[in-house]
Image (cartoon, rainbow, N blue to C red; front, side):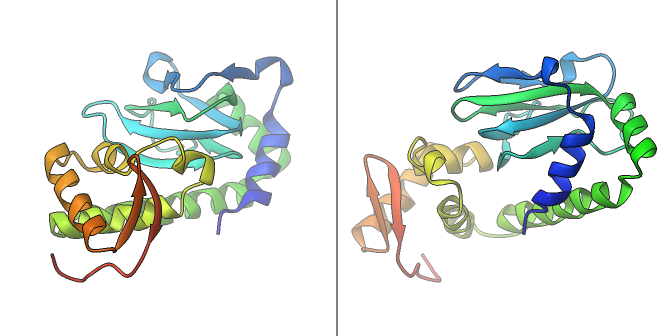
Length: 202
């Protein structure tokens, strides 16, 4: 479960309303363009986090959320975020973030954020490491069904899977078409509506 109370406690401690910016749908915000380490606080909306080197989507997250809190990394991650609709976000220097943590003794709150992020990373790895192409597609279909409804309504199943896996569009579409034909999934205009019991083998 997302530790929202701890994220909100951290956000309330460090936020400065004058820093909050509005972002539009599909706007890209890169951490690597900042010379010193920063944290990005997502106050409202849903974002996708991508790796810069290959543009693979790591995960989707909804507000409240904080990116860039790993204090052992001495430079900004090679990642960027993309807004999935209108968002409100804030960029804060990590040194300032850490100073506030120390002053207000919020390390316990931060530990919960770390634990949650570690859990999400393990889930991400389990979806795509050491499994077949068919299993990757099925795992990501299941993951798509857990995403916020407003995100599911805006992204096709094929686009979602391709962004997260680098599988070929044709290969993904073939599996999706066969699953739809077999009545295992319901898709309309590419949007995943429902999943029935997926077959173990393809």
